[in-house]
Length: 176
Image 1 (cartoon, rainbow, N blue to C red):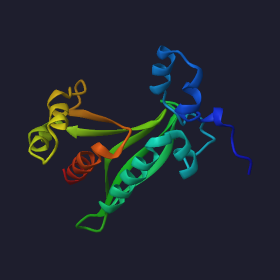
Image 2: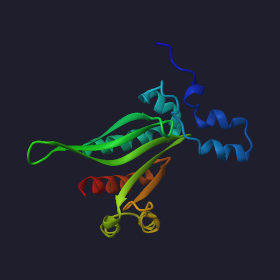
Image 3: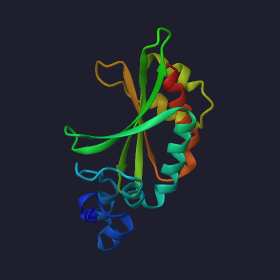
Image 4: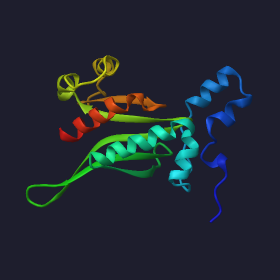
């Protein structure tokens, strides 16, 4: 099978930003990748797209697996991009299969985003978790989504420094 051209899913940021102005570099940094429905997010594609953040991604996914959360990638036509869905599955008391979405992943130019949709009634309990002050401030400042009773926590992950807090929040989310 012929490998798709890098332009189909985006080149690593260090290659594209080499000959750009400062303003163009900023736009490139905020560019979502994995937009081609024919190019699935394999380990190799993710590694190249994430660049230096690839090691943090591997560590993040390994942490999810340790918490019995599996990442499933799917192309969404409404957003025209591949998104990873962190699913926690279990068997209910009567034997039925249950699942909860613990987090969402999207790949950007040189980093990935983790989004956790937290129920509004869990905000106080989330603030009681052992998290860094900056993460607690993010929880405090997060706005409820319209009439929905959820607020999004969005983390731009470029290194592994936030992973402990994110894993704590994802584990908390799967239990509520």
